[in-house]
Image 1: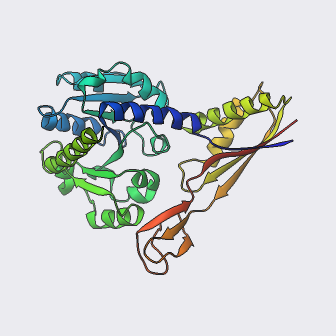
Image 2: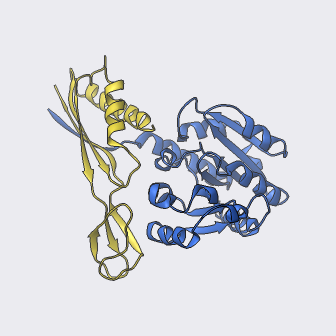
Image 3: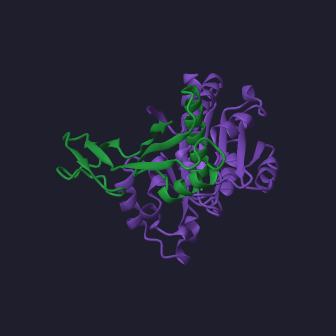
Length: 220
Length: 113
Protein backbone atom coordinates (compact mmCIF):
# COMPACT_ATOMS: atom_id res chain seq x y z
CA UNK A 1 0.00 0.00 0.00
CA UNK A 2 1.27 3.45 -0.90
CA UNK A 3 0.98 6.17 1.74
CA UNK A 4 1.45 9.80 0.72
CA UNK A 5 3.45 11.68 3.32
CA UNK A 6 4.26 15.01 1.62
CA UNK A 7 6.23 16.07 4.63
CA UNK A 8 9.35 18.24 4.91
CA UNK A 9 12.33 16.14 6.00
CA UNK A 10 13.31 18.90 8.40
CA UNK A 11 9.78 19.20 9.81
CA UNK A 12 10.87 18.65 13.42
CA UNK A 13 13.81 21.05 13.17
CA UNK A 14 11.55 23.65 11.56
CA UNK A 15 9.05 23.38 14.43
CA UNK A 16 11.73 23.85 17.09
CA UNK A 17 13.26 26.72 15.09
CA UNK A 18 9.85 28.39 15.02
CA UNK A 19 9.59 28.07 18.81
CA UNK A 20 13.07 29.58 19.19
CA UNK A 21 12.09 32.44 16.88
CA UNK A 22 8.90 33.14 18.83
CA UNK A 23 10.82 33.15 22.11
CA UNK A 24 13.37 35.60 20.70
CA UNK A 25 10.56 37.77 19.36
CA UNK A 26 8.97 37.95 22.83
CA UNK A 27 12.25 39.13 24.30
CA UNK A 28 13.15 41.42 21.38
CA UNK A 29 16.52 39.72 20.89
CA UNK A 30 18.19 39.85 17.49
CA UNK A 31 19.80 36.51 16.61
CA UNK A 32 22.65 36.19 14.13
CA UNK A 33 23.77 32.77 12.87
CA UNK A 34 27.38 33.11 11.74
CA UNK A 35 28.72 30.57 9.23
CA UNK A 36 32.22 30.13 7.83
CA UNK A 37 35.00 27.62 7.25
CA UNK A 38 37.28 26.65 10.14
CA UNK A 39 39.86 29.40 10.54
CA UNK A 40 37.98 32.05 8.54
CA UNK A 41 37.85 34.31 11.59
CA UNK A 42 34.42 33.76 13.15
CA UNK A 43 35.63 34.14 16.73
CA UNK A 44 37.82 37.15 15.85
CA UNK A 45 34.86 38.89 14.19
CA UNK A 46 32.68 38.14 17.22
CA UNK A 47 35.33 39.55 19.57
CA UNK A 48 35.64 42.71 17.41
CA UNK A 49 31.83 43.01 17.40
CA UNK A 50 31.68 42.66 21.18
CA UNK A 51 34.38 45.31 21.58
CA UNK A 52 32.40 47.73 19.43
CA UNK A 53 28.91 47.05 20.74
CA UNK A 54 29.18 45.79 24.34
CA UNK A 55 28.87 49.29 25.80
CA UNK A 56 25.55 49.81 23.98
CA UNK A 57 23.98 46.36 23.81
CA UNK A 58 23.77 43.29 26.01
CA UNK A 59 25.28 40.41 24.06
CA UNK A 60 25.54 36.64 24.47
CA UNK A 61 27.34 34.15 22.24
CA UNK A 62 26.41 30.53 21.56
CA UNK A 63 29.51 28.68 20.45
CA UNK A 64 29.12 25.57 18.31
CA UNK A 65 32.16 23.34 17.99
CA UNK A 66 32.71 19.64 17.54
CA UNK A 67 34.82 19.64 20.72
CA UNK A 68 36.49 21.88 23.34
CA UNK A 69 35.47 25.15 24.97
CA UNK A 70 38.38 27.30 23.78
CA UNK A 71 36.10 29.75 21.95
CA UNK A 72 33.64 30.13 24.84
CA UNK A 73 36.56 30.82 27.19
CA UNK A 74 37.82 33.59 24.87
CA UNK A 75 34.36 35.19 24.77
CA UNK A 76 33.87 34.95 28.55
CA UNK A 77 37.18 36.75 29.09
CA UNK A 78 35.50 39.85 27.62
CA UNK A 79 32.79 39.63 30.28
CA UNK A 80 30.20 38.50 27.72
CA UNK A 81 27.94 35.53 28.42
CA UNK A 82 28.85 32.47 26.35
CA UNK A 83 27.39 28.98 26.05
CA UNK A 84 29.46 26.24 24.49
CA UNK A 85 27.67 23.54 22.51
CA UNK A 86 29.81 20.52 21.67
CA UNK A 87 28.22 18.63 18.81
CA UNK A 88 30.44 15.60 19.43
CA UNK A 89 31.21 15.10 15.77
CA UNK A 90 28.15 16.59 14.10
CA UNK A 91 29.02 19.08 11.39
CA UNK A 92 26.28 21.62 12.10
CA UNK A 93 24.01 23.02 14.81
CA UNK A 94 20.33 22.10 14.96
CA UNK A 95 17.40 24.00 16.42
CA UNK A 96 17.09 21.71 19.47
CA UNK A 97 20.71 22.46 20.45
CA UNK A 98 19.92 26.18 20.37
CA UNK A 99 16.69 25.66 22.35
CA UNK A 100 18.74 23.97 25.10
CA UNK A 101 21.39 26.70 25.04
CA UNK A 102 18.72 29.39 25.34
CA UNK A 103 17.48 27.89 28.62
CA UNK A 104 20.87 28.72 30.18
CA UNK A 105 20.81 32.42 29.18
CA UNK A 106 19.10 35.31 30.96
CA UNK A 107 16.90 36.33 28.06
CA UNK A 108 15.44 39.38 29.82
CA UNK A 109 18.90 40.87 29.88
CA UNK A 110 19.89 40.46 26.22
CA UNK A 111 19.64 42.44 22.96
CA UNK A 112 21.82 40.32 20.69
CA UNK A 113 22.71 36.64 20.47
CA UNK A 114 25.43 35.59 18.08
CA UNK A 115 25.52 31.91 17.20
CA UNK A 116 28.91 30.78 16.01
CA UNK A 117 28.06 27.75 13.91
CA UNK A 118 30.40 24.80 13.41
CA UNK A 119 33.13 25.65 10.90
CA UNK A 120 31.69 24.26 7.67
CA UNK A 121 30.43 25.76 4.40
CA UNK A 122 27.94 23.02 3.56
CA UNK A 123 25.97 21.38 6.35
CA UNK A 124 24.79 24.36 8.45
CA UNK A 125 23.03 26.01 5.51
CA UNK A 126 20.05 23.64 5.56
CA UNK A 127 19.25 24.04 9.25
CA UNK A 128 17.02 26.83 10.46
CA UNK A 129 17.95 27.63 14.06
CA UNK A 130 15.35 30.34 14.64
CA UNK A 131 17.80 33.10 13.75
CA UNK A 132 16.86 36.44 12.21
CA UNK A 133 19.73 36.44 9.77
CA UNK A 134 22.32 33.98 8.54
CA UNK A 135 25.60 35.75 7.90
CA UNK A 136 28.80 34.23 6.60
CA UNK A 137 32.47 35.07 6.42
CA UNK A 138 34.71 34.36 3.48
CA UNK A 139 38.29 35.26 4.35
CA UNK A 140 40.71 36.50 1.70
CA UNK A 141 43.16 33.54 2.09
CA UNK A 142 40.35 31.10 1.19
CA UNK A 143 40.20 32.47 -2.35
CA UNK A 144 37.73 34.33 -4.55
CA UNK A 145 36.36 31.19 -6.21
CA UNK A 146 34.51 29.88 -3.14
CA UNK A 147 31.04 31.14 -4.18
CA UNK A 148 31.29 28.87 -7.22
CA UNK A 149 32.37 25.90 -5.12
CA UNK A 150 29.93 26.35 -2.22
CA UNK A 151 26.96 28.14 -3.76
CA UNK A 152 24.42 27.09 -1.10
CA UNK A 153 25.95 29.00 1.77
CA UNK A 154 26.46 32.14 -0.32
CA UNK A 155 22.79 31.97 -1.29
CA UNK A 156 21.45 31.43 2.23
CA UNK A 157 23.42 34.31 3.79
CA UNK A 158 21.86 37.75 3.85
CA UNK A 159 25.09 39.41 4.96
CA UNK A 160 28.50 38.34 3.70
CA UNK A 161 31.69 39.44 5.40
CA UNK A 162 34.85 39.45 3.31
CA UNK A 163 37.32 38.98 6.15
CA UNK A 164 41.06 39.38 6.66
CA UNK A 165 41.31 42.09 3.99
CA UNK A 166 44.59 43.15 5.61
CA UNK A 167 46.13 39.99 4.06
CA UNK A 168 45.30 40.98 0.46
CA UNK A 169 48.92 41.82 -0.46
CA UNK A 170 49.90 38.21 0.27
CA UNK A 171 47.18 36.48 -1.75
CA UNK A 172 45.88 36.52 -5.30
CA UNK A 173 42.34 37.34 -4.30
CA UNK A 174 40.42 38.68 -7.30
CA UNK A 175 37.77 40.87 -5.69
CA UNK A 176 36.13 41.66 -9.02
CA UNK A 177 35.68 37.94 -9.82
CA UNK A 178 34.38 37.35 -6.29
CA UNK A 179 31.79 40.13 -6.57
CA UNK A 180 30.76 38.93 -10.01
CA UNK A 181 30.04 35.37 -8.87
CA UNK A 182 28.34 36.63 -5.71
CA UNK A 183 26.16 38.90 -7.85
CA UNK A 184 25.05 35.87 -9.85
CA UNK A 185 24.27 33.76 -6.79
CA UNK A 186 22.88 36.30 -4.37
CA UNK A 187 22.41 39.75 -5.90
CA UNK A 188 20.75 41.14 -2.75
CA UNK A 189 23.47 40.08 -0.30
CA UNK A 190 25.06 42.83 1.79
CA UNK A 191 28.85 42.74 1.54
CA UNK A 192 31.14 43.88 4.37
CA UNK A 193 34.85 43.84 3.54
CA UNK A 194 36.73 44.13 6.84
CA UNK A 195 39.68 43.15 8.97
CA UNK A 196 38.96 42.20 12.57
CA UNK A 197 42.70 42.57 13.19
CA UNK A 198 43.22 46.15 11.97
CA UNK A 199 39.63 47.27 12.52
CA UNK A 200 39.21 48.42 8.90
CA UNK A 201 35.58 48.11 7.84
CA UNK A 202 34.40 46.84 11.23
CA UNK A 203 32.37 50.00 11.83
CA UNK A 204 30.20 49.42 8.74
CA UNK A 205 29.48 45.90 9.98
CA UNK A 206 28.59 46.94 13.54
CA UNK A 207 26.53 49.86 12.24
CA UNK A 208 24.42 47.47 10.17
CA UNK A 209 24.15 45.08 13.14
CA UNK A 210 23.08 47.93 15.45
CA UNK A 211 20.29 48.84 13.04
CA UNK A 212 19.10 45.23 13.00
CA UNK A 213 19.10 45.11 16.81
CA UNK A 214 17.15 48.38 17.07
CA UNK A 215 14.63 47.20 14.50
CA UNK A 216 14.07 43.96 16.41
CA UNK A 217 13.67 45.76 19.73
CA UNK A 218 11.08 48.12 18.24
CA UNK A 219 9.06 45.22 16.80
CA UNK A 220 8.85 43.10 19.95
CA UNK B 1 27.70 14.51 6.71
CA UNK B 2 24.48 16.17 7.84
CA UNK B 3 22.77 13.54 5.69
CA UNK B 4 22.79 11.22 8.72
CA UNK B 5 20.80 13.79 10.60
CA UNK B 6 18.39 14.21 7.67
CA UNK B 7 17.99 10.46 7.20
CA UNK B 8 17.30 10.01 10.92
CA UNK B 9 14.44 12.52 10.55
CA UNK B 10 13.15 10.68 7.47
CA UNK B 11 13.18 7.30 9.20
CA UNK B 12 11.54 8.66 12.37
CA UNK B 13 8.69 10.14 10.32
CA UNK B 14 8.31 7.07 8.10
CA UNK B 15 8.28 4.59 10.98
CA UNK B 16 5.82 6.66 12.97
CA UNK B 17 3.45 6.77 10.02
CA UNK B 18 4.01 3.08 9.20
CA UNK B 19 3.08 2.10 12.77
CA UNK B 20 -0.07 4.23 12.55
CA UNK B 21 -1.00 2.26 9.42
CA UNK B 22 -0.26 -1.03 11.26
CA UNK B 23 2.35 -1.87 8.66
CA UNK B 24 4.57 -4.93 9.02
CA UNK B 25 7.37 -3.44 6.99
CA UNK B 26 8.32 -0.56 4.76
CA UNK B 27 9.12 -1.54 1.16
CA UNK B 28 9.99 1.79 -0.42
CA UNK B 29 10.60 5.40 0.62
CA UNK B 30 10.40 8.19 -1.94
CA UNK B 31 12.16 11.46 -1.26
CA UNK B 32 12.03 14.66 -3.29
CA UNK B 33 15.29 16.59 -3.23
CA UNK B 34 15.90 19.85 -5.04
CA UNK B 35 19.22 20.19 -6.79
CA UNK B 36 19.87 23.44 -4.95
CA UNK B 37 19.71 21.86 -1.52
CA UNK B 38 22.95 20.95 0.17
CA UNK B 39 22.23 17.23 0.10
CA UNK B 40 24.44 14.61 -1.47
CA UNK B 41 22.53 11.65 -2.82
CA UNK B 42 25.23 9.04 -2.18
CA UNK B 43 25.57 10.21 1.42
CA UNK B 44 21.79 9.85 1.85
CA UNK B 45 21.98 6.28 0.52
CA UNK B 46 24.92 5.51 2.78
CA UNK B 47 23.07 6.88 5.81
CA UNK B 48 19.99 4.85 4.80
CA UNK B 49 21.99 1.60 4.54
CA UNK B 50 23.67 2.29 7.87
CA UNK B 51 20.59 3.28 9.84
CA UNK B 52 17.98 0.76 8.64
CA UNK B 53 19.22 -2.73 9.72
CA UNK B 54 16.93 -4.26 12.36
CA UNK B 55 14.22 -1.65 11.74
CA UNK B 56 10.92 -1.70 9.84
CA UNK B 57 12.79 -0.14 6.93
CA UNK B 58 15.43 -2.87 6.61
CA UNK B 59 15.76 -3.88 2.95
CA UNK B 60 13.49 -1.08 1.73
CA UNK B 61 14.22 0.73 -1.53
CA UNK B 62 15.24 4.37 -1.31
CA UNK B 63 14.07 6.38 -4.32
CA UNK B 64 15.27 9.95 -4.69
CA UNK B 65 13.37 12.18 -7.10
CA UNK B 66 15.49 15.18 -8.08
CA UNK B 67 14.02 18.57 -8.91
CA UNK B 68 15.81 20.98 -11.25
CA UNK B 69 16.02 24.62 -10.21
CA UNK B 70 13.36 26.86 -11.70
CA UNK B 71 12.85 30.59 -11.23
CA UNK B 72 10.52 33.38 -12.25
CA UNK B 73 11.87 36.73 -13.35
CA UNK B 74 10.45 39.55 -11.24
CA UNK B 75 11.15 42.06 -14.00
CA UNK B 76 9.54 40.42 -17.03
CA UNK B 77 7.67 37.45 -15.53
CA UNK B 78 9.49 34.85 -17.61
CA UNK B 79 9.76 31.40 -15.97
CA UNK B 80 12.91 29.41 -16.68
CA UNK B 81 14.98 26.44 -15.58
CA UNK B 82 18.59 27.09 -14.69
CA UNK B 83 21.68 25.56 -13.13
CA UNK B 84 22.72 25.91 -9.50
CA UNK B 85 24.98 28.80 -10.39
CA UNK B 86 23.13 30.83 -13.02
CA UNK B 87 20.04 32.76 -12.06
CA UNK B 88 19.89 35.61 -14.52
CA UNK B 89 16.73 35.74 -16.62
CA UNK B 90 17.57 34.45 -20.11
CA UNK B 91 15.04 36.88 -21.61
CA UNK B 92 16.02 40.19 -19.98
CA UNK B 93 19.21 39.44 -17.97
CA UNK B 94 17.60 40.63 -14.72
CA UNK B 95 19.00 39.16 -11.51
CA UNK B 96 15.81 39.93 -9.62
CA UNK B 97 14.33 36.47 -9.70
CA UNK B 98 12.23 34.33 -7.42
CA UNK B 99 13.07 30.68 -6.93
CA UNK B 100 10.04 28.47 -7.69
CA UNK B 101 11.65 25.04 -7.35
CA UNK B 102 14.96 23.42 -6.50
CA UNK B 103 15.18 23.70 -2.71
CA UNK B 104 12.83 20.79 -1.92
CA UNK B 105 13.64 18.41 0.92
CA UNK B 106 10.49 16.33 1.24
CA UNK B 107 9.35 12.85 2.09
CA UNK B 108 6.97 12.20 -0.77
CA UNK B 109 5.52 8.79 0.05
CA UNK B 110 6.20 5.28 1.29
CA UNK B 111 5.14 1.81 0.22
CA UNK B 112 4.20 -0.44 3.13
CA UNK B 113 3.09 -4.04 3.62
